[in-house]
Image (cartoon, rainbow, N blue to C red; front, side):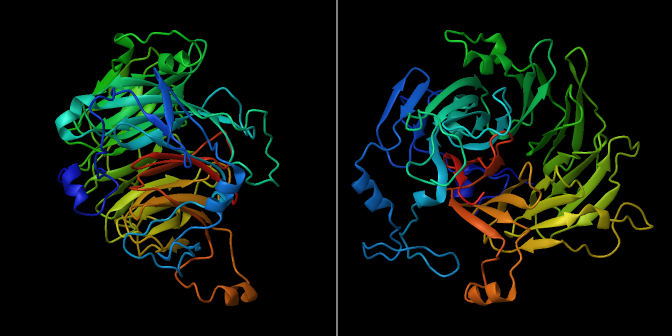
Length: 494
């Protein structure tokens, strides 16, 4: 796979491994500053690395008049956009209907981020109190002429309030600070190269968990950082991060080309990492009890093109799957001496960009391709042929959707509900799906005029240049998505 630049991507559709256009940035803005942009407020106050933004200070009547509807017909009058029925004219854009969200906040950063991850925290599971707090880590993509501006951003987002007046019937607990201004605190780790994909892992520590990140970069190197002190600094005012703490604790140099595939094993607490590159090679790196990292220099080989996505099995410690631009998903066993796949499934005629392995029902695997098609596969149906690793016969997904008209850039199962999936795509949308939905005959008549919209589609969220979407593992229903900017949101439907 040839390397794609931001300029090249501007002239064509974005792939999962492509890069969005750089944002206009004030040259005087420090590299470690961002703005927490609220949907209804354009004024910001900043102090050091804490940014505040008001939710909505306008009179209720003015706000309610604006929220009443979206103008999609170009006549300066209210209109409602109905997926599958309404068409946007050139120059028209959509505005979110606040009544469909429980929470919605937008975040702008100095440079767009291709990839991010949500970090588990010690605030408890199944949280329903608003305002909410969450921790994330992301990697930037600066213009090629300003590569030195690139960094890893460790972030704490707090005071994330519910939409004012929205979802009054919700059982969520609210504290007295619902209308508080959202806060963003962050620490920057200089990187000097674009982050293609970043993933976090928490390993046992002597007292508290050690939070590690693995960053696949344009430079072909994979950097492992310990961001534990950066996270701790948010709750310890005055903490200074030293230059030594910003340095990687290990650098993987086995890859000869850049890559986009990286995953930490959920079943190896100390840390076991898979990385895949554009040459189709996959390497495994293991963290020892002493904290050091060792990369096995014997790659896993089998893909005939770039490895776009890789994931460990959530239930079998030695098994992983990889998706490739050769149109296949392959299943591997790290114990194999041959370093070849145990199963090979041709799931698409185009690039398979992304993949997600269900943690609740571990024989289910979701994938998304370059043509905008995503589907769900039952791994129990994948049987190797007598000839070896290839699967006999053409595989059939248990569910397949051709709703998106551009490449699928991210797909992720809900952390506790194996029927709900979030999908992002190059058509600037993040969609939520419920695979358990089935229409009866009467309902089918009511939706007869919307043939292009599957009944399983729950929600459509606009996200310019959508690249990745993740569910928060501890705050039910909350998602974060990245593209030209970040969105943190929860809909009333999930």
